[in-house]
Length: 180
Image (tube, rainbow, N blue to C red):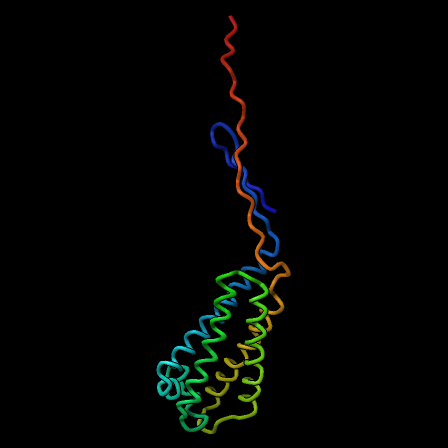
């Protein structure tokens, strides 16, 4: 617990900051933010523009999906839908700041991410260069690693412990003590 004191002229303002799993909550919220952004950006791209997703995912001149087989509109849109679903659960955990929902989100990403990584580890498309393939494997590994970190970092308490309200301790005023 951190206690800070600040003079107010007629007393002292006392604020307390509880440090109960504070770093865990900060790390959890950052990881949920990354998973939410990944799910929503990838999902929206694949649902709204599945052919563009197929042709140019992940962007930056790389074409990882196109290198792995022919275009299938239904498959690309479904991939987008499940990315959106995982992103929505992560967003809910982030919005509600609930460690139980965070664990459910982490489990969902892990269940998706591990087979996804294993597929890419054992099925190298001929059209990908060594560097591009290495980057795709690294990116595919990040999802289950982040998901596992969410499962391990999520604090036991369901919600962050609220900070106590600050209070002011006022000193009694001295009366005029003129002695003549």
